[in-house]
Length: 189
Image 1: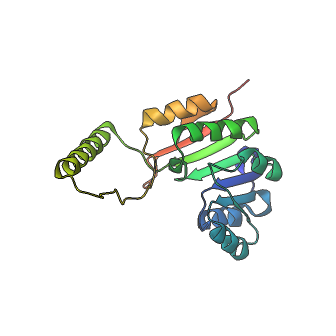
Image 2: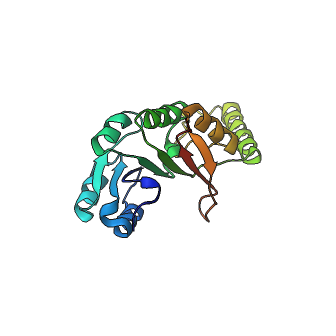
Image 3: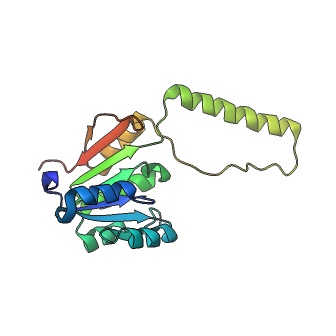
């Protein structure tokens, strides 16, 4: 079995334990080189030992140069399964532009943090109410102890990011856990 579209080398960003990527490697065998990345060096070390047929690399969207990774492994397809939401809009656009400049033909992104206008408004109102509540109570030393999880985006915001990157966007059939799946391809010349 060969990879469709002439894909020979795929990189998966934010792969974590890389189980899905391992299954892809089992299906395509030698026909597809797979590189997995994550910012966690311990996980990438363990993945490298557990799945020796997959290349594992530490990669941070904010500090590492994706162009070097693409050149090193001759990547022609990038996969992001829920990991794009860890980037702010500016970083996401730069990341996609760098992939495009490096000659990555395809980007498949499963967008995880999607919001609609109602949910966005509801969160804004709640956030404002909490801020006012603590201001009125004058709680000394109060700090938000929450942690960052993801940047939420609407479908419109995603389409703006993809257009700014220079890729042609196609929305794919939704899956149970991912309603917004996009295939980004190089525009025809």
